[in-house]
Image (cartoon, rainbow, N blue to C red; front, side, top):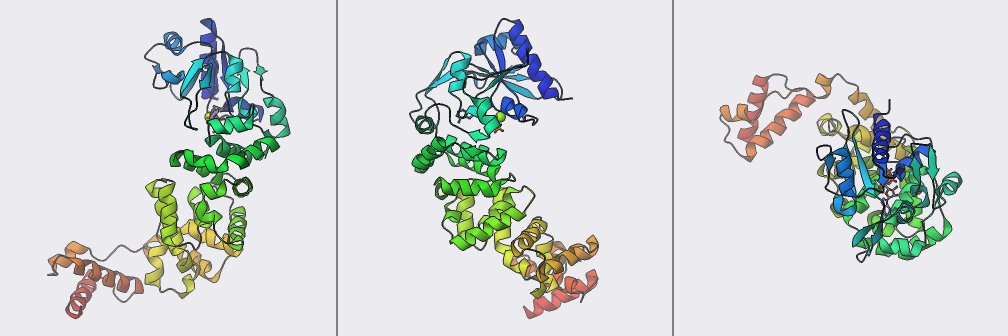
Length: 405
Ligand code: ATP
Ligand code: MG
């Protein structure tokens, strides 16, 4: 059972019973018409935020977005939340990002403030009816992303819409309508008005979808790529081709993997600049950085000693990186075959428990400090090579190495 859907129908029914118009709006209508299960449902209504709160009660609503006309209604167990937005039009847009203020209005005006025709439809769950003021159904059938109204003006208002156009084209496998595309081409450099977080959020969604190669091609064609991913845009054509080819061969959606492909062979400094500029999470930045730093080593794993290879193989991104190396090489390589063979070892062989830790060394008489770390590495290496096997061996080796060191 689709609890979100039932809840969204219930929210609309309760608003209607209270005398207001209430419709499903935007992305959920688009997805439902495409036969996809919507991620979430948005309700648009003639009720003002105060009236919405009266209908559902203060307990069940959150009013954080009330100034923009949005009230969040909390569902019962498992039903999630629904955003109920008063029909509105946006006024001002003096910063190229968001409206200066909103004015409450009717459904038709609310449709016209939306970004693309495919996102501008309403659906009335009471009578199973699509309400389309903007030609969205036609464009959905023709698989076209078209700005509502004058594309120049719409991208001028909110520069992020340019990236959203590419994202919807890539994720839905739609074309961008010619005038819309031309307007993006003319305004591409204005993308700098958009915050790094919002750019990154769109980019991540493009790279995680199966159409990511097409997303990158569209970004390049309309001139956005150099503003979104200058690190990639500036690479030699042949490098970009190999990267695109590699991306095409990857059939799982991982943003870290995609970014690692796009920065393959780039200097670590360049990768760090990219992850900082996009304000990626620490985890994502670390994963991309690790893959960038260790790709060459793993690709030539057959030349590494076991103590050199083992720490790479137990890293969390090792499996992903091996897949990437194979995708780029067009199949398994001598290095990746060695990696896969080792990864198939029983866990206690792949990653045996250490024979001792720093405290053991200090108890054995080694002074706390950098020497402890160095000796632990010596001992670990010997353990992995198989030259020592017990804690006593390890302490003896450490003391001997301390004497030499
Ligand atoms: P998804 O949730 O899959 O990203 P969506 O269409 O639901 O797709 P949201 O960002 O959730 O996109 O926005 C909901 C709706 O709000 C959109 O369908 C669109 O009608 C409108 N909208 C969102 N962002 C903008 C924008 N920047 N400019 C104009 N309208 C927008
Ligand atoms: Mg949505």
